[in-house]
Length: 398
Image 1 (cartoon, rainbow, N blue to C red):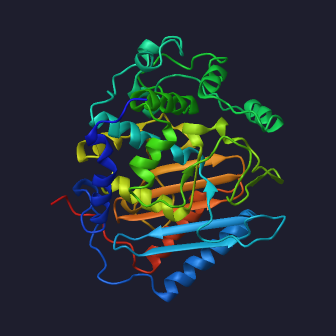
Image 2: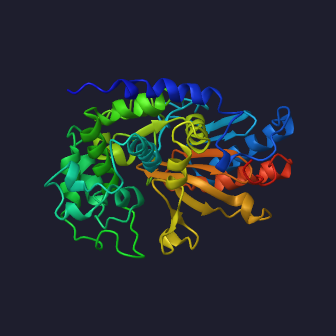
Image 3: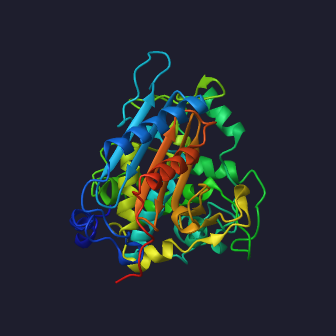
């Protein structure tokens, strides 16, 4: 296996040094508004957030609900309500790990974009350049199109495949098998076709393979060295290729425990487990410049319309990042504009959002796939506003 050049082995240390300065020196393009001089998490605010989490858990019927709110001054609220396992009744802890599904994608995108800014990878490189012969027409599909879901490659992750994975829990799915599953379906559109967009998990399986070809390291190692360790995300990991849930909170869907899923079926498209606090820390690290250079981050955050995908007229997508104006009655659009990602996987729903107008970061998760975490996020945003905790929209960059 090729040895990494010295400047690449020093990268995690450099990112750690950047993170140390993170609360006081966020990236200028996304700097938060006026920072509170002292703790803004007073007892009344905490009590209202606690009530919100419990009410959301009860309203959704989820066994467990988790919420983390990170303010730009460094204050962090975190809470959990419910149980981690319906069979044992073990209480759900605020630092419980859950499967976060497609929230894996901005992690993988950040690694790919680090490789781009290091000049090991080009956004215009084709799939065929790195994994020749794997995808018909791979010469026309670019890394940029994979990141932005504009490749036209069909999605491999169907209900039928998930059912087969449950029937054969010991089978470890290789990335090549997952791509082959996608190729059983017709191409959605020509790569990069104007105005076309379609969310496909296959794009990020291909990105995972490309990252491994570029670095000569397993994807798990690159995620660990470039993101997880530098940002101190002690509750975050790429799930092992096994149906053993390990120490994560159990997830439920359709009235059944859906935790026993061999996670090799999601890998680079949705294989991470994490705590909600880690999700806020990752989001701050990404948005405040601890992971990417300003030019690279700005490129990542250029979100293009998706044609009203998923019922959201304002829903846009960048390079591994979603943009939405979340519905929160009583708040102006600039306070509701959010950058981040959501995740849905057997038994789990999650969301992590950064609000550039205030510098607030919110992550929420339910251990029931039918529950919508965005309702918990917007509820938290309204509670913050009611307590005067949301800063005014950020001024222009200094």
